[in-house]
Image 1 (tube, helix red, strand yellow):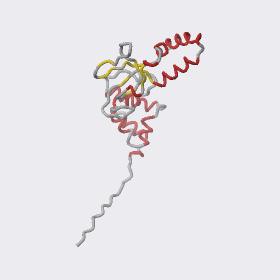
Image 2 (image 1 turned 90 degrees about the vertical axis):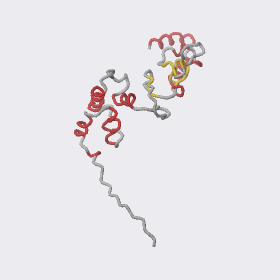
Image 3 (image 1 turned 135 degrees about the vertical axis):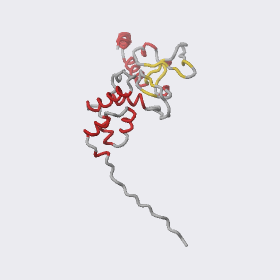
Image 4 (image 1 turned 120 degrees about the vertical axis):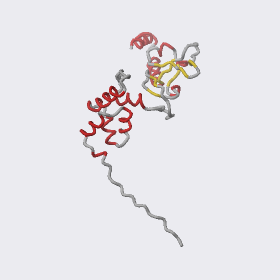
Length: 189
């Protein structure tokens, strides 16, 4: 005697989450901590749109109020060029933003990134003259085993590759007599 497998029939009900009116969604979000807002933004495209709008003052207020209400010890506003949602992602998400390695918490504030091995995306100053690098944003390299040392036996400064290449190409294209003035102006920036 052969038994036929039972067929399971599932009925799929439409998800009601995307049809929540924006006014109700805003009221719900006002009582959520930043980690929950980040999770909610991943539920569907509509919620992502509501919570990631950089132009909406309401969206920015939701993120700001959540940060102030649930994490009062973080009084600092987002750094220049970063909105409240990006700031929350930097503070509360874990993992390298470049390679995806989990459990990475190290934030390089000079570059506004969280990463595991900063050397992949930054360039050590060993190959470019110090004068050209003097006006660039940098971070100092420190790892579990101690300070990384440059050939000058001091902690090595690390720079964004794009910034270094841009500055170096600007410098090389200048006439020799204009280079000193360019270096002085870069240091003041």
